Length: 562
Image (cartoon, rainbow, N blue to C red; front, side):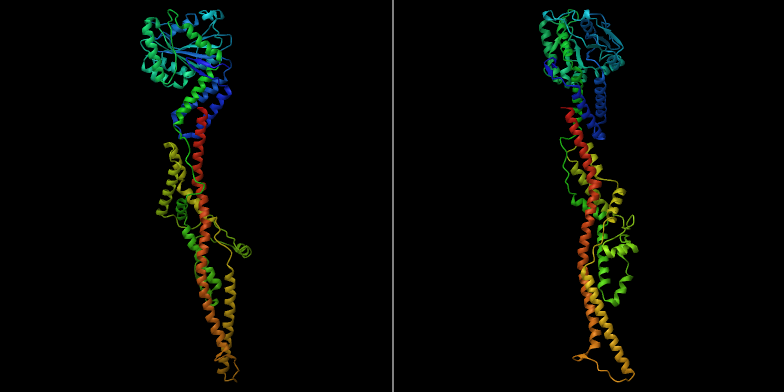
């Protein structure tokens, strides 16, 4: 397929499949960008996507060329000169074209395409008229497939004319901007059209009509000025064609340009590709060049703030108290253990240690079975703890949104700050779902067995002493009592059992304090891991999702604008 040549610009043909791929990339960017893209630009981009789908669905190899210009530029006269017939009504002073007029070359039916363009007035150029003006060398024009439109004036005083002109300009394949020596520097032409369509240089032709009104020197100067203005508008390298519908000067050159566009059969895809590039380029300012990196590990400050909000210090303190209570109840002096039963269970008070008989049996065999209710009875987070969570999540959002446009940064910040009740419930469930127990230490059993032995010795010694006292009180014969030196064995057994039992209980209390601290550290690590999971799921994951959407939108726009 030959390249489309408009002025000095050459564009390789883009296939319909490639065009649809770019349209798909643009659609993906719009879906991923969502509310973080400018709504007006999204609306324009959606219209471009729809236009690509509709234009590429039209059968045939037609090239739609629009003659657009200001009032009095003579575009209708130029249209008639190209057609070779008085099809368009020419007005001397005021706009006379209220609706687009179409001239169609070739036998292929263009009805469906013109229906899509909403052009009702149509003229079929007969084969005998094709090439009536001729090309240098006696060649005939080959304009089969050309659909030439004469549009209403884009600066018409009648608003409906302007609206109709702008509507059709959104849909055509090639723009032919017709101006005249009086209005070639008109601000509306340059600001509202040429600058806006600067990326459509490959499908743009600039025509200076009514050239017969200028001297050769003046014509050369005006053409140079118009070319410089077009380059300032972003259409570089454009060649201005000077024409005159009266003398037919330049009409053949313009016809050759149109014939080249028709022969290339890629003006439609080139225009649509330019639309996609321009739209993607405008949307590209709504995304950053890259995405901030988010650390794999959850921020320590965030975990610390969440742990305090979840009541982990309270839980750890309860675990330590529970450990000490159990240690003292199993290793303390047997005659005072019953006092421990009067103390409230710190785990039950927080609804973190509810077990029934079946679980108790399982606990004996498995050593670590705990059933919890749906929620704990942990006190709600204090205002200071909630403020710490807000600050920590805000910092996560600020770091993750650094360098992003405002809408994306706000979306990242919102993602990093989930609703309070949901986050609080997730933290509570994380605490409730974390095992707070571990296997009982071996020294508990050893100390407990030793305490029973010492208690038994003390009881036997006490019983022996009681027997001796009763025998003496009844004045019965003395019984020979063994002794260790001056101390009789009954007294030694009783005193030794009591003293050693109390001493062993004191040692057990000391070891229980150390063990409770270690158990608290172990449980705290479990709880922090659970809280880290909540932070990863409720805070980091949503932030990553926003950044992933940003990446998809950015990559889609880059593919569309390629």
